[in-house]
Image (cartoon, rainbow, N blue to C red):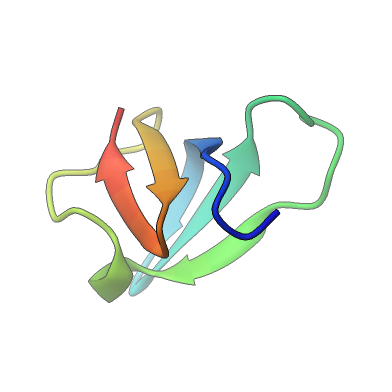
Length: 58
C-alpha cells in the first residue's frame, strides 16, 4: 500500500543518484532515487524509511 513504511538500505551512491535495496526483499532490483530526494547525510550502508512519500533516516 502507498502509505506503508518501507525500509531501505543505501546499497550504492553514484553521482546524483542512490541505489536503494528493500530490506525485506533483498533479491528485488535496486531502486534508483535522486539524491536530492534523500537526507543529505546518507552514505553507503545507511538505513532509510520511506513513509508518506518522504525518505528519512532510520
